[in-house]
Length: 234
Length: 234
DNA sequence: TTCGCGATTATGTATAGACATTATCGCTAA
DNA sequence: TTAGCGATAATGTCTATACATAATCGCGAA
Image (cartoon, rainbow over all chains, first blue to last red):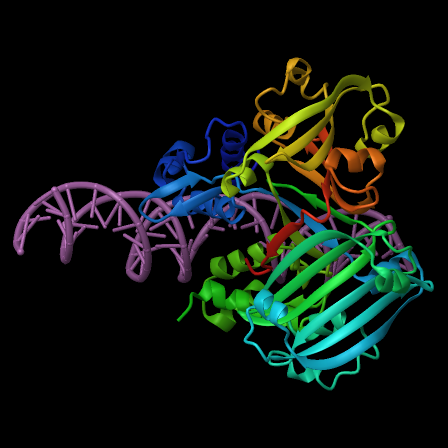
């Protein structure tokens, strides 16, 4: 005999997955489920709250609970940390800061990030190397208004991403993944032929609404991939 | 004044994010937090359960609760549905089945999917077109043991992905994203030059442990990107 | 008819208590 | 010293209740 919580959850998920309860269908009220399963409202409430958190249903006060419209599908992708990945694989990792400057934000970046023109940004280019083979080029902007202490940081011990993550926990992130052909300069730095397909991961992070950083990481396509796993029913 | 639940959650998340409570750190017991915040155990319990569900902490009876080891970072990416995307953008969408056959699974695919050699698979190649411009090429394997009714389906109205999603809800999926240079045949079909960087999304789905389908979707890199948003604090 | 407002109702948050489950700790006996 | 076992302590699940909050419904007034 399983727990009631799980049984209610399974029942509802099955009805939704099978299509018996289509998107938009108003599922029974808490007090109805309560009667059906002979349990307290708290139990039903916790089940429904969990399903709502997972995006399967939408709840609105007074109106009730309906099966959520299937949003476009989602994939959860793992984004590897170079140092960690290297340690696990038992290879040597190092990084090199190729460029460092402080500049007012350019127009395009201001648009992307929603920052006012003229905001001072720390601009960094970092090459990630494992066993003497370049693995990725990282181009990063750090908002000095949000992270003033980055100004004096030398990034001697940790690459910018790791350093930031430890100092500024982000609460919101936006990701974009693209494929591009490496141009001459990029190809040279990554040690591949010009035109090689590369995976570009762009990530912008905010902390409580304040823009923190933008990173554009370019991986040689023949050497890297993003892997993910996703269970919609948790 | 925020809700207590949220305040406790914010506090704990902040301590973990800031590194004050490093991975492995044993966080206060429920009764300690209960005393600290002057609330009932249920309140604390619900917060900790939620954080555990989100993977931030690990709970064990009698032993207590510890900060979880950071898994590699995750990105949640939206995977657009062509028909839906087209409708929203107000452009015409159509698709064309380029190839269809039923074959025993090949060795490499058997390895990837964990199916026994010789399993009969429906193999489909589909070209997705919007406003007469090819948008993506989809190469798909469908497990006829799990979805026998696919055998007789003509895919006249809906492309295979849409058709499958309506019939066989998946419970588990694996995603891989890569960048590749288009070879001659691929380039011709997508209407791009040979060598153009393309984004390749591979997805394998299971339903309750039974393999359902594998899709490899190739997008011209200059025309497509995957976009995602992720809030660790929900 | 339509606007506005109060009553109603479903969900949101929280409490205090109960019993179940499962590791761990520490004592006892071989 | 160690194997085994019972006490103990922490989390897991559930109940019954209370009050807060938000959105809708329906009534009455303009």
